[in-house]
Length: 565
Image (cartoon, rainbow, N blue to C red; front, side, top):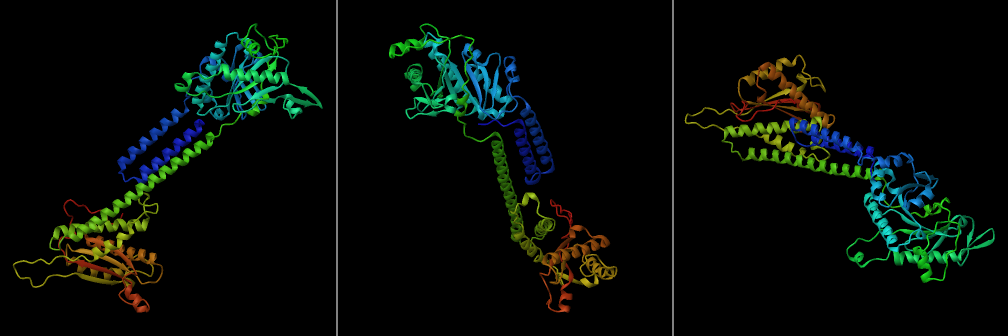
């Protein structure tokens, strides 16, 4: 699994913090105190994650400082971590620690135990190299005289390779390069599952014959049959003897990470009675040919084999960061939709419960009925505010469902009838609702909601009628004809009703709780709109006085909000 860079991690945390703030401040139905604390907590968490992401996951010890200092800055080719005997590595690298070529880069580690130890440190410095890492182990069988020691070395290499696999999250390409003393020739390569092949400088310029045992260069055949036979025998000995599975491995130990094999004949130091010489003499008729084995001779790097290294399949660090970002964004979008749907459901339940409570109260219960009516008026003003100024985010996202309740609220408010009080003393006459119809032309100019100066006379007469019935509920409703758009007529009628309400409340010193304002637009005509006279009659402001003494006084336990938010 690729490691994301510090910039990618910080970007993800910024995305998470921004989305969390949006949910806390705009979607969740919390108060100002809860929003403040949630926002402060979110910012603190993002700041802490920002600092933590910038820290190095692994401190670099002094023993790795020299190697990390020699690393190339940018590299898009395979990064090969090289382990093996110190003598072989000295002849490969010389005094250098890094060898960089156009199609690969070798890093000298040393013993096999350094493989799993250095991998986390290396990835902390170069996270983008996770998919490019490979491992090679160089070994000279003719430099060992104890087959048990050689088997232990190889098993330790595979153990460290398994630890490297756990560190980088996938099985890296791995190769064991075996050197044999002999005439310098090409690389003999054998993959984990496959046959022996010849790869080298000669193969790049020559052609392989049909028998696969010789290469033509310049028209002359170059025979490699003895080396091929010895290489096949070495690979068989490696698989059947050195790396043979023990019975315990089949039951208690995890399977080893497989490695490709490569053999190269070159000038090598040979110990008398080495394990390969004994095996070769005991099982074949081949006899090793003696060549110069000076230790000063440098060993060849398997440069042609770098093209054979497979690339692990999987997403890059950038794609992984983008995938995480899309997953986080999708999760927050789903959470926002669920919260908005929950908020709308709460609104529906609350308004429906208020309506049900209002209808369940009998008309004879004067106080509770008036209290329930006040709650309905407040609900209607809330829905009207959403309709005029836009739905808030916590109810939006296309899920707002309060429109279906607005008509029911207006019908319940308009249909309110106060109870008739029956007393022992005979009452000559029970007061009934009164309606004052004010012509809009005498109050406003066409298309305007500002009162004309000459409207004062009409409003004073209406105010006198209102003062004659103190404490009654005053319902101010604006109406228009059907000229123009429905939305425009709705807004104009409501604005005119509010203007009349504001004048009456100011000039008459009437409490705001005594008023209920409605804008019906062209929905309730009293004449036909097909004639000039009919349209003039429909342009009006109705003031309805509901005969309920004390209805506009504040009810205990319920405080009416301001009429205009």
